[in-house]
Every structure is written in C-alpha cells, then in structure tokens.
Amino acid sequence: ESSMDTFQFLPKLAEYNILGSPRPPTKVRLVTHYGISEEDIYATIKAVKGIVS
Image (tube, rainbow, N blue to C red; front, side, top):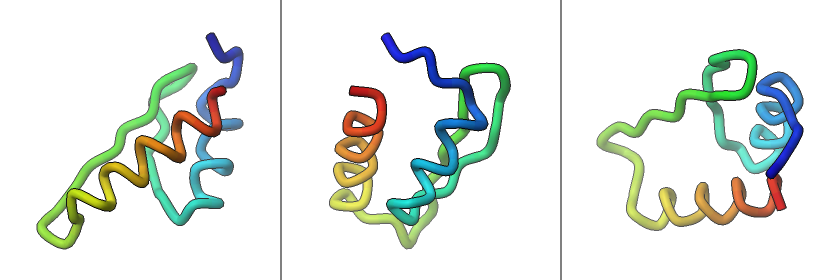
C-alpha cells in the first residue's frame, strides 16, 4: 500500500498528461468524456499502477 497523499500523487500523474482533482487526504477524482478512448483508460490504469508500485 502506498503512503503517498493526494498532493504527492497528482503531480506524478500529471507527468503522464493525466489530470485529476484532489480529494484529500488520499483520494483523487478522475473523470472521462466523449474524447477519451478505451486505450486512454488502459494507459491511465498503467500509469497509476506504475506510480503506486
């Protein structure tokens, strides 16, 4: 389990050009819209796994 807080995690996520909204202390909000593809979703999952591993 990661001990990273929201404000440590979001900048790392932004390095992958993925934006999220803070929900402190340890949660973020990610949303999709019509321009987000299934491939984008899988890339986001891969990025999150890489950050928290």
